[in-house]
Length: 116
Image (cartoon, rainbow, N blue to C red):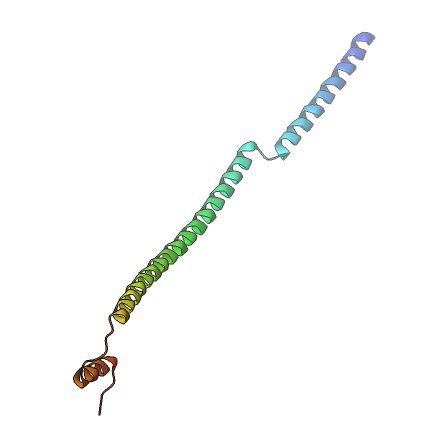
């Protein structure tokens, strides 16, 4: 009987120690955040970063579009100025002396001068 009490005491001690160890393991496992919580947080962060990135992309695209429009306008103006320059050079090469006073007066009127 004494031996059974000794073994019973040891058995009880083992059960109590096992229970304490299991409760500590359970408490530690519940104190850390679960993987699903971390996944949700990462998804939210990813969505906010994507949204910010898309906003920046849209802003840059609108700036690019406006700059492309200005470039096209500038190219058209440059093209028009080149045409005008070519016309002026052509007209300059075809200049002849006026034959009479009426032609001189007509040329001065074209230039904006009014003879008195």
